[in-house]
Length: 318
Image 1 (cartoon, rainbow, N blue to C red):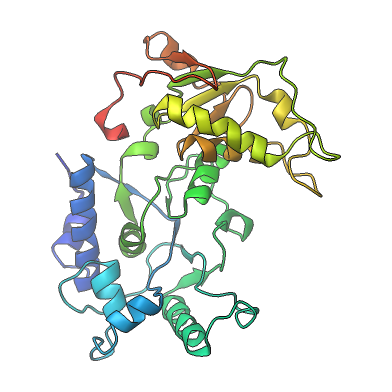
Image 2 (image 1 turned 90 degrees about the horizontal axis):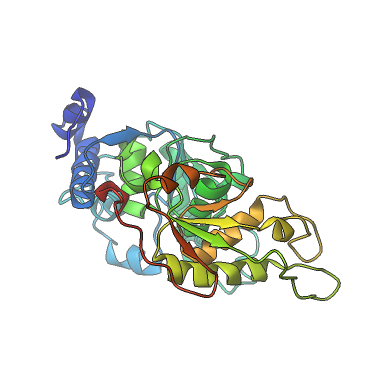
């Protein structure tokens, strides 16, 4: 059963304004659907508040009234009425825009479409949202701390935040992030909870296996992504703890330049399918598998064979 704090009840009752009430109503429906029992506070939101592609722009054309924004009201907050949108109350970041700000003509974007994208980003900026123009916020100044609760969209950014940085976020959507920017709340569910971040499957990579030569580089990020594919199929969407990946982490991982030793973990996690990736002595959650061994909840798997799903995970883990 979902339990609200006094401040959350105040927002839900409308004491902090109509828009925050609509945002809280959306988050309550979301939390109840997930089976979450409470919310966590977040001060790090990354989404696309108020953005609109040409279809949405046409659909909501003429539905604004008295300076109230139809797209944010009806689409972002799923409201049944127009509401006045207040500023974000927590740090909020706008991810990718609809068109490259400098090369939009080269990409064939029509001028009227580009102007509409500019207007939507200007709307977000007027409500205290930082415009990043990227799907990798951690490369543009938003680098969450280990253990920090975030509300992020963008699957690859979510993987990197959880697997490499140790921040805590599920793969949120536009609606939940827009609601979070007005409330500073997100359901305490899934990867926000410690028990849902522990390794559920151990995967042993044969240390004798040698990476295939690719040009003048010994490694390539695609090899790590391919490693994740069978892991994802075998682990059933649960959390993989990968042993014997040292050889994969010691070499240059990108053509033309060297990247850090932790970035490849995100490549493996991308292949797994979006859950936290663990590697022995590497990454934000190294060796978290140990605490589950005594419970009999760990299954061994190889990268080429399926593993049975782990029993006993809490319902709040999904």
